[in-house]
Amino acid sequence: MKPLAQLRLTIPQSENLRYEAIRLLVNGLGLTKAAFFLRETGSSKEDYLDLKEQLFGDKTATELYEEIKTRSSRLD
View 1 (cartoon, rainbow, N blue to C red):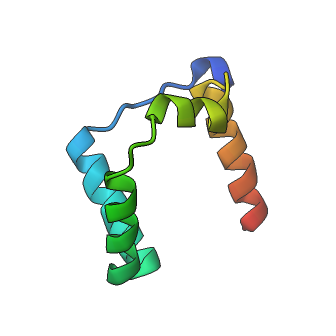
View 2 (cartoon, rainbow, N blue to C red; view 1 turned 90 degrees about the vertical axis):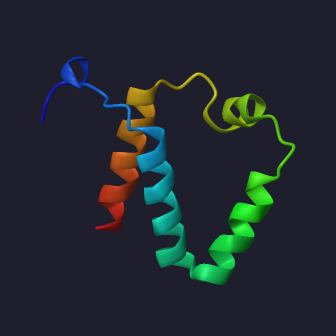
C-alpha cells in the first residue's frame, strides 16, 4: 500500500458520480425507497456546508478515506 503522502485522489465527473449513486441507491433500497430518499434529500433546505461541518468537522479527504477503509475492512 502506498504511504498517505503518495495517495492521489481522482475527482470523478459529476454526471458519472450522480449516475452511480442513483444506481447504488436503487439496487440497495429498491426503486420506491430510493425515489422517496432522492425526493426528500433533493428538495432539502439544509445548508450543505453546515451539514458537512457537523458530519466531518476538519477531517481531510485522506482522513475520511482511511476511516472508511478501516470500517469497511471490519465488515469483511
